[in-house]
Image (cartoon, rainbow, N blue to C red; front, side):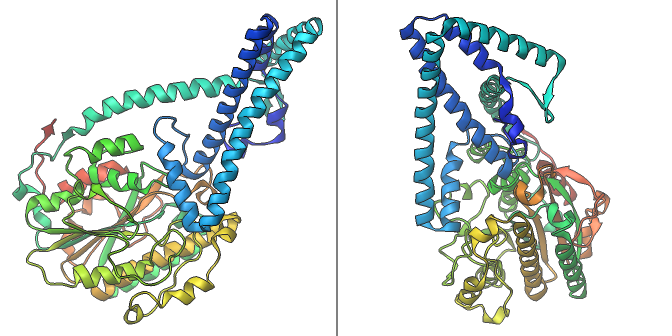
Length: 520
């Protein structure tokens, strides 16, 4: 089997596996009892490699990377929760049970099959020996001359390669864990005195907003781009009329297709948080996050508005948030939109009522996570009058009339179309909120956390996401004038591209922070 869905085709299964030839030779040389034991063990190994291949296929299709045997088991629970939110509990339980039965049958069937084949070899030793020798010669010849069938090498060693790559992946993961722990202890601004942190933003209400799955594909893919680009142009002009100006660029995310928290933590920590172990290491450290900078300075109060958080969230401390409004603390009485617990427009209105619109002794630094553009992009909320939002009940009819998640998931073209519409909705909600409620001291930084899944963004899409800084005070954007970013909400195709972990230090430097390194 290949490790990607795009390579899955008939020619793949007509190749000559070198492992089977070696296995046949070994089994022919063994007495019955050790032969049966080895054959059964070989079948179990084949089943395990098959499952790992399936996981690699799924992870590459959705997350743009291979499955990590050490780190990724916890994500299977997240996948089940996502399906439950999208398709319902009954369908998810049925799918989970069916998958468990399928895997158990696979292990039993392959173990039985290899034992049975070993018995056939043992009953016909002469024929089996000749056949094994001939197959070996053919395999060596095809391998030496690169013989192909429909563009696929006829001589295969997929099982051995998979086993080797998984072993190397485990070893690399364990080494990376130890090395990254040392990296996380080094912080260019870790010892900076509070009065030397972002002095050029004092008095500003800072808002850092992540738009779920807002990736480069939304702006440049021929299916999604026309609608999204039009929305960005319209909203740029609307903000300009309200006195706001924006600059935009690109960041290369540490994640792809999902695991949004890796994108959040990478951009805010200044570290490349590309897997769950790195995330746990960073969250347990005293590394200075960009949002915590504002708390440490003593010049801001800090708050998080996170409708996607539905359980205990100890990361609050790392991000320096004095108060977090989760999915159950925003007073929402309307329907969920698949995984998203509430529409972005409602989230932003509650942010205004509970945080931004209130008088405070200090300016506010807020981290806001918008979730309406989370897959499966069905149903998608629609904008309503800001004065009509109430407790969110107004969205019941909109949710009921929207697309069913299963219909969107099953259709690639529709997934792309609906994804584009969801980005248009989120950008519109955010910029209308700013236009309606922003002040001369409001500074908005918003970005995507990652690209959407490969089925939407394409199998060879980049990991780039847009990032914009919007402000009414021209001095705020003057500070980043040398970044080369594009004017407006749409970054140009050739705008600078930075790795996402570089954003924290460049932002802190641009706004007057003085580096005082901490070295663990």
